[in-house]
Length: 260
View (cartoon, rainbow, N blue to C red):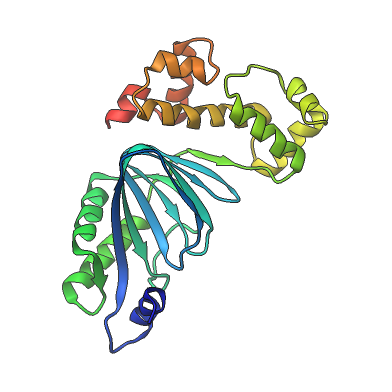
């Protein structure tokens, strides 16, 4: 029997082992790309070291050190890993009841949840039929049900003109060109491009570009680049302007965020 079919049988057979939580840990020592794929289980993908960029059809999420991304079962996703990254993943069976997130989201990982993840990874899997494991599963589900989301999502538009604009902005995050110049390069009007971004991403064009710059900056900061260099590379005129945006969005300075 394949591993996938075995895992499904584990959950469904009342008289057999009832594996409700699985775990996996791997360290990548260099930049690495995990091709787009789908899981039948919910996932909490935790980056205890390094930065991950998670791609889905609906949008992207950047996951800095000691944060995680929640990916519900059935959501196709790919992952880019920047530098050396230690990834610890918790897989949760869809049979488990709990008020867990129904959409992808980047989340803060509390010290308590961090220790639960480490402990679960050491155990390998949790069997509902074992009392000690059952208690741990309940505790873990409680923690997953109150995950505090952080604003590190980049929603993607569907319109082909807006997608061309996205490609331009990603390739040149430091480009200070106005929406009019971007619209002209993707063969539409500024008014149309603004409307598309607002309707399909929930953000104005300017707010979307700021979010892109923030996510690009996250990767550079996590790689050890100085704040001044990062600010200029993602299009800010001064480090102070970049720090002000960072603090307004995430509630703290870049230095404090990455040492927390």
